[in-house]
Length: 118
Image 1 (cartoon, rainbow, N blue to C red):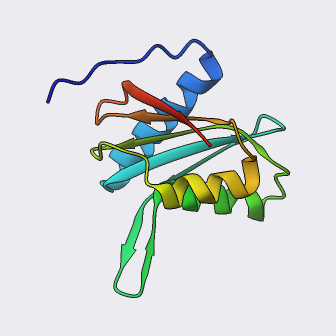
Image 2: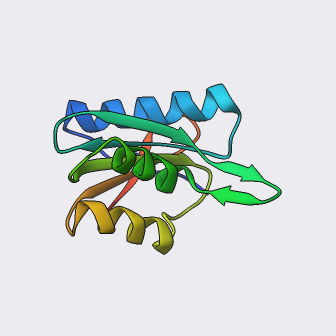
């Protein structure tokens, strides 16, 4: 399948894709994600798959933001081989971010290939 890149005009959103890609590469996980809170702090995470625990990268990055006291999110990014951002992940993001927050999906190289909103 041919992937089409999407323009990420905001340099802070592009940074989220870089963080997500580097987290995925460093851990060898299927997904890497990063979120930016309303104070400009970023949180990066990789998906976790253990015998008794499975957490997506976006859910974990969001949990990290919540546990650090974030009051909301401005944007998120996930680098994955998946063709979609799962509805469960969008729901987790929406719980903290509300509606209308951009979620960038990047391919394995970190290139943005889609944008959805919470």
